[in-house]
Figure 1 (cartoon, rainbow, N blue to C red):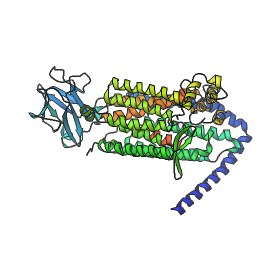
Figure 2: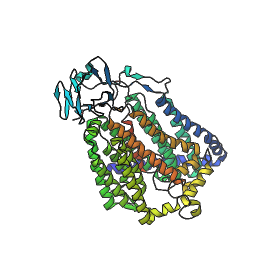
Figure 3: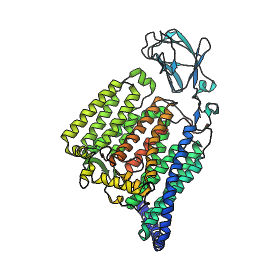
Length: 593
């Protein structure tokens, strides 16, 4: 094994040396003909913002134009012949207007029963209704499997379960072409992908030209390898699903921006960051496969929760402190931030199927895990991540319970905790003291934020060109303050496009949950999207003094391997809510055991 690693190291070093020689020769040529590089920069400053906006619009239009008839998994047929479609794997039945199957009769409870699809069978569960639930005339206590033709009685209201032939023998197939309404205008994802490659090539050349004779050999090598890797991944996705790849395309675009930022600020870290992107794509693929099966996803949830607790304990006992926070952990040759990976476990811990939510109404386990995570982060002094976790907790708790009193109590507790932290921890108090007054502390505690605002203004709408900015020399320019660097070098239009893309992830999640097959995936998607939104808000607004600076990275865009891998993992949770797959490819399954 050691011989293999040594050979691989020598091969990589040889490749880097050859690339360095070629890059130096080309860099010297363009340094000699400086006018060519300047002309290129002038043109590309106008082209890249137009490309960025075009790419974004091409990715969101398929979602906005897409129309889908609700998938029908079966029917509940009343005695008069009226059929009520079952549009989900989990259907609440009751008098409430929010019920999936509403029966507006006074003797039916507001939340009477829940009909679910599990283990290739349908089952009915009583939600402690006043008049109970019976199957074929026999009253049930908790849950009962029902089959095609069975009569379900809800307080005397008789409903027959009607399934077609496919559903009798196994899993329903909602992705029949009859259930799909095509968009009014098809947008070719291959063209969008080619435009993304064009953006990355033009941006990479801009960095290359700006370095002149001192070009770093990792720059051309990283971009070539990244383009090859994302092309291979795109072709695999295209082969598997054929369509609906807007989420992945936007991730490619953001990863390209990430490499442009790292190439300008820390070219020595380029190959490491490329490795993180490749690991992230692999994690996205593996996690997507694991959670597509609902039974497997439920089991995976507990494995992730235990793993997260172990990571937090290791971080508390063995972690390294940087910039006042004990957020780093070194295991062998790898240094990473455990809290980034705990985000995935945190979201998964909050997921639950509708039958569990309606029959148990117990959030104690999730509240306990949330308290453990947030308590550990407080001890690590990682207060920015505390805000992210608490915001996600509010979203998940509301989706699980809908109880505003619980949310209000949790928020009140958070406010009291914040006041206590500001009062007794000088490090936190100093951040709040600077907030809103950074120009009065421009040479001390407000140095980073004032320089961020100066860089954002100096870049204008089009930017000064990749590798030509001065903000890259500021501490944390490529991580916590990445919005300033992105704005200075690539322009406010590109920077705002990156922000809007992440906001779109949340819109995407909400759109998908409307027809989501299970509340498990709906909670996972919205929980992951809330983390993206909160992180982006803290990063962008904190760097320009609208919010306190918290030291939080911007998903996908900031330099950092742990953040990149975790971002791809969270995207997999959002994608899990997407039913829009090509018939015959990647069929949704539920092999719950």
